[in-house]
Length: 492
Image (cartoon, rainbow, N blue to C red; front, side, top):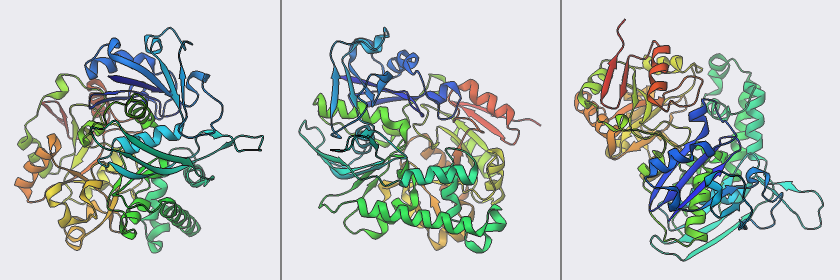
């Protein structure tokens, strides 16, 4: 049994899930317009092909909130599921199936919980703004940006327990959106704002050119965020927390949860916690809760790498050859297998380089046309991670969504991996092509780590082979392009 899902708002996407498989196609990767919105139906046939089924295998389609303008204008209960039995939304084959519509926050919560390894978890989702909801005796609808609660669903079982509810408006997400607009002059710069927080006050003005007042304001904003996130996570005798919504990408607040709360031993922040992951969450919720299909386990590979691919991209390159290029200080663009889901490149559409050569961190930022003070994330073999990073729970770090402090050895031996405050947004790997490359690099250098950033320049992460070649040609400072098993060297 398979469920398809569509979302047409900003960060629009289409997903199909079922039988332990996920395909997730983000509109921006195909239109090449960041955070694109609009019609996603035209990618349905590609999604069917990638997951290996036909239209007849799809049981239903689910939309989030006001799908095509046909959904409800407000919500009274967070877990309400609207089903349209007869009305057809369009002539597209996607909408000849039964249609469900669920709320924005239920889709976020479904994504956070059903992609996690947890069977019993607290859930928190905070966004910029989400669905309007109706307050008793109040005429005007009010938008909320927060939902809290818990869920229990054992793997292999059809029995579930969801207790999710609205929380009074927090405006935390909107605060970050406003900061993005006021500091950097536009939307979707919240990550850059968070990077400012890791720069000490004594060098803040010199490094960033912003005033010391900006320093104090962003720190006050971060402290408010950390406090709200911590307060909203309710105490329960279970084993973890699942986070979604744009605020879940605030790694400082998430790391504080792990450090300060003894009742929390695991925090799950999957890669597409922003609105781009709504379709995956909506489809998983309908599949496991409404259609009562037994809960499946979705591995880090299944969750992270579920986008576009083809046969040429699935071929394996010569790892020792690539490791030698990296040892020699080359910038390597790696394009392999299925594209990543979400805003972080995790090794399938990545720019990689040697962390032992400090100047290469600046070169990566120059290629990406980013500010010099921006950090670059390290990726490391799981078995070595504790030597370099203070990881409170290793399994929280698969998706480059949680930060950690560096150990003394880590900060002294590989300073390029750390921000000014000694933290890093770490990704650990335990298997797959990137693991094999790290292993080959470790054999050459005795360091099991690389610097990793997304392969793109002021555009969405590259998706297809043609896009990879085009970006490689434009960016003369990228030395090597690896596409499947082909290794292309730049000849000056």
